[in-house]
Length: 297
Image (cartoon, rainbow, N blue to C red; front, side, top):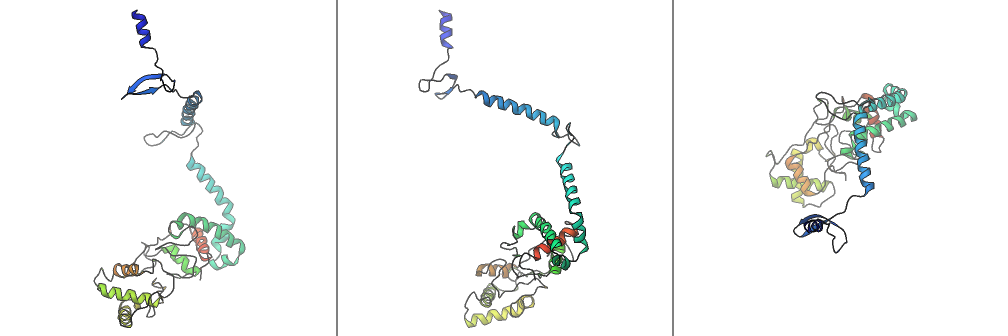
């Protein structure tokens, strides 16, 4: 009787609702059903394990103290990329040599060189410039649009090349310099004066009608503090990187709070110098590419 009782005790329990046996595990009255994994899934899992072990043996996989396991094939992605780049340079060698020997003007006048420069420049732009200026050079708030004809530092071939080589407000001493002072933060102008000059700037840009008395006050403040860079008529100065305040193109925003913030705290965005980071041929191709985007002067 004892044996029969023990056998009945250990007999798998069948769930009354699903008709599936249980595992014997139970938590807070919830019983675990015995649903084993499908065979095909298990065999796939085991095959992946075998594949992983083989991968460890064949390819570089395990880090060592000062190196790594090289694998029985002796292959690694770094050498594959280096070989691919060497092959690409060999294919481009003929045109790259011509690109190095030609002036920027000669490149644009030669259809074959121009096509080669634009292709190489487009790739370099996507890798290095697009994060700020956008994939098509359309810019963003605080980053110039390279498709229009409004240039802070000039849009000729030579000026674009100078900007790419040495940057703006970068660590390169030959780069473009010139910051907009923080007239409010440094105590040069009071807040009412800053508001008055912001109203005046919006008025010369055709954005706002200002009362004559306030307009005159803003004009006087502008002449005393801003005209030295932006010009007496607000047309800007490319030598200083001072933007034209009378057109409809704004690097940040033409709304009044943004202009007040700029006058109060200044502006001084930085563009890195690419000399030393990119080779001369790439910089030349990049110059031609940017110049031909549509806004080159």
